Length: 315
Image 1 (tube, rainbow, N blue to C red):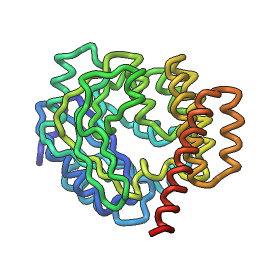
Image 2 (image 1 turned 120 degrees about the vertical axis):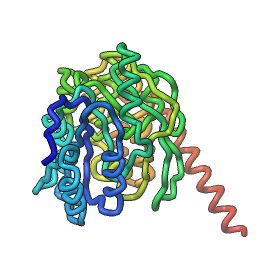
Image 3 (image 1 turned 135 degrees about the vertical axis):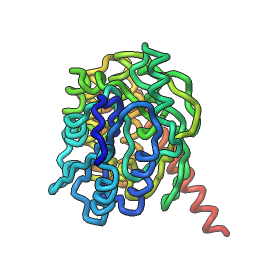
């Protein structure tokens, strides 16, 4: 009989899973292959999957009971919003540091956790560290890459205009336990990783290593592809407004300058003119410059479409 490991948990991995049957095995293999001189665990949260994700998780749970600690939901929690997934995971987190990896992504370096914990020990001023990742495209047309190279450091003002992926993050548990993070995740906002990074930037330095140690898998069923769906754009925007009020004037300016413009253009391309009208009315009173920039982008988009159609008709 194997002796129980009584060492404290140093790292907790938080993994969210929903209908990730084609991908979850690769994800879990990335956890159990980690080579460390400390103890770690993986909280694997299955959000009532309707495919065979649960069966694969149970297989790893039986084989690696000291590492894989599953939570099996009978009712989907993501659909309830309100930061429910993040709160559930945080309640089960025991490590001094917390890592993240969604069930459709995976780690490629068996020393990832060891390297990041060592980085924290050498940089005690940091609240969050991250690394580069490789993008893999499954079934989407947009081939824009994110986070394949990273800057050495970020502030709250700069991280909003750039991107590093969730699967690259290791953060101090005290960030998740902070009042600021708890208040922010209680808001129905779709970008939990952004909230995490914003909170970390208020509590310490954010620094990274330009070394690819994970894969960001982009496919049509991923959360990043689906969370900005047609029916929730205005609700998501209002949530961002509420989140911005918690983080100060620099975040509020970014929201009005960038996010409002993004949602106006998106609603136009979706041909949801009722939503477009609501956003324009809000913008005219709260951020008129963003409205002007959005209308300019829409005009350019229409002009390009007209030229394209004219070219097609002539040829």
